[in-house]
Image (spheres, rainbow, N blue to C red):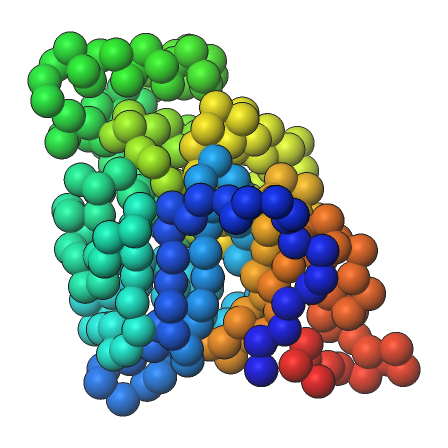
Length: 267
């Protein structure tokens, strides 16, 4: 059963830019990975998706961005909306053209290309070289470290620098929504802070974000709204400020109940 925390925004309803309704995903036509998931991302806001490994977080992002088929997955029920239009079952090329970009887990840079060449790849759907150059200038202004590294071979960069390249490549595409899967994975605390500062800067500039993250403290510090997933379902959602203060969430991420026993959030 899905629960909501009280205290949502008052006044008029914020504009939804990305919506997921009753989404189910099957792998190999038999494994039910998502079970009736509902989620919304508001325009100009950051939504965070929390939960343990295997909860279905990455599967949800893949279903939205159209890359499930790579893993022999398919949307078996439910719908995905982008700016009010149905995009369920769209290909990755179609979702990118819509302005919805997925930065996948694992820092998959094109390792033998330079930083600048990696960034240029992100502009393959832009209308011409002038448009690509304009977006490159924006990225270099926004992420000065990439300007310093523009001629470096991407495979020799640190993990944090590679993550910045991937975020920069997403920004070259001139997105409306960027979904980032585990941006802090394997990074040192100083670099985690730098990555989340960058994401905060992009949010302040009006970008809508959907972030999957194991580092709950960092993610909830940036997010406006959060969802907790377990076993392919959303088990809790609410404003990020209330999730940060929720004792059950703290126990969930420590993995221990009050008496020291293992527990799941649904318990």
